[in-house]
Length: 460
Length: 177
Image (cartoon, rainbow over the protein chains, first blue to last red):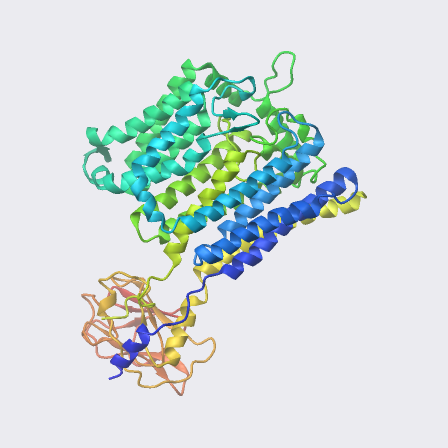
């Protein structure tokens, strides 16, 4: 019989698994060239010549992402090949659009923003490399479950204790240090999934199995309802004290998504949506700020006396004038979006200048990034990694949905930045760190385990 | 700048943006259906080895498979069928790589594919390469309930076309490229 021989063959090393780092490198070159093209087009359209800083921006971001790529090669050789190029492309496009808005007019506040954004992107990629190098094994984060939960709460609560400033537009989510401001709520996007995955890993069996069946739904026991009620209350408290609708939706959304993934119970999703709806209905009736946002969502074209349409109306006009193919980069009238054109409303400019074709491409890129995150969750071998990958991808995808939905009038507008694209230092830094953690999980998930037979199931 | 240049650049930018999206999707696609699996299978084949590849890691189905001595080793032609896929029945999802050896099907423990199927006989059927015809042939080996090829009961050895379904009891097996 040759059975023994063939067994020996099955255990023999079969060469390295494909690591796809070269795919990543070529995609990265592509991703660095697209913004350079956009940059040239904007300059030609606005000044009639190639912009002077074209090489500077191109090489600047290009060398940053090259460093990031080298760190992936060194520290996470089996990681997903798509996340880094997509993030780099989105970041590069964001830089071009911010630079373009800088040129349009000295938009208030902070001008010029593009240099700062490039600097923040550099810092973000530096943090990316630090996470790559220092986070040897993401499962260690599990030890810091409650610490990260506590840190998240502190970061969420801190801005409420700082004096409110005139330029904050109602929401108290910034900390102003001299010269610049940071938005601590952004970092919560990473801390909360760490806390939730650590927590749910321990509790998920109780949440999934100990329930009574009623009308085809699995109702959780009262004592298991505890955590969801606590999170719900906290997110409402943020909403009330900081009037920050976006963060509280994000906060609660991540929790419901992770609860659903951990327990596979649809009833949790129903509960979550019901409770969120109830809470926001109540807050909308008591808080003037939130009610104003809802009114503006319902009647975006209602002009205020003595002024034009509101911000959503302006964004809708920008999207409409873009049409199918857009006016071309640098040829729109985006400075007409008076408020937060570079941050929350940057999707309006993208829509005006690249049309629905460009907006869909950008949204598909976000979708691909989130998909790679969920794919990582599927491939991850340990429950903590699965939950963490789901939580981080959900945070990312929810943020895109919240801000894109707000700008296009699908849901009430909440102040959030479009990840990687919009101006905002805290946001860019956090998103680069988020991608780094996802890549670490993906590295471990795609790495062939030592001694594992490469053809599973062939041994009797 | 002339209007034409700007229009070309505008459309060019959108095209390049979408090209990136398409390339990214291609990368995902090659990740899913990459040449990785077949590459491994042919490597093993060249070394004279291991006929079964269970894609399903379900412990219940996989360990029952036995290796069969490679009786003949014809060279694989390009485009020739490379594996059998079980599409229905309790083993659904399992694939078995074809390496030129006879594959026996049945409830008997020494079959290549051990069928856990109430309607299968111990030695139900066999699938073997026919050198003269250059095709894989399925033959019923005296089963009680019969072997069906595309809904017709087999009466003698019949050549298999890729994609045609062999049904044994509740199990359906297909030859794939």
